[in-house]
Length: 309
Image: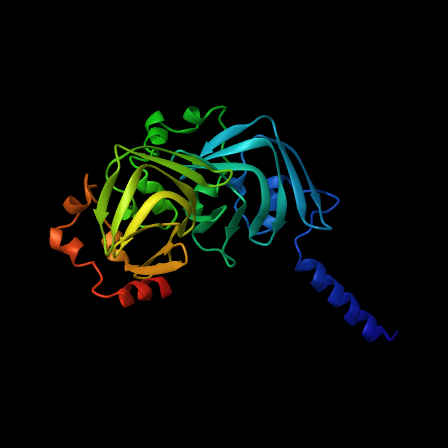
């Protein structure tokens, strides 16, 4: 090989090496490693005892002294062992981190920053994406033994508790008015996103369609959708049909979609943007009894039209 060709080859190899973050034979600290990949040092607490990195697939294992908590915009729980993959601007396939969003502890699956850097850090929790200010991750924080100690004041933790189940809807990109004002309790299981909502008593709300709420409503909630719903019905003409799914567009548009068996109905989202009182009977739920009467089909063909939609 000619000397000039050899020089070009060496320069190319040097350029390749210099453009890729390297965990060398003289390993940096875990915090320096984060910076090598364009990530802020404060993503991990000050209690790291060891870490390993596999450059063949960019996987890592971080060991902490013990499980602990740090209060960012959300309270974050760190298990003793944290694993995942690291690439430029992103920690992915994370195991061992959780964030408290309202009452729920959700797994943090991915942490991402913009490249080039902006003021944002993005937490991906299942189907939910949350944006946090990068400033709170620019220093390395001590990790506390329990959740209340991690907060500056206990009230910071308490203030995260949702007042109503409607706040949970909002978290998942759904309008708050899908549930009435008579919710007494709810539970949420983050392992499968299932929920149970309890109302004071069965009741009705008049949207474009009259909707009947049973005392107990169950289903699953994900970004922009309530699915596998039990306990909701809508009156379409003379028929009471089970509402199996409620969906909105992501990003949001003006539409809410009710799925009733094989029928899909589109409603204006404006009527779901406030929380409504729930009435004891169907006539009371209508502004005037005539609204209910006006829904009766004049001909059988109108019934066919609903079924065919």
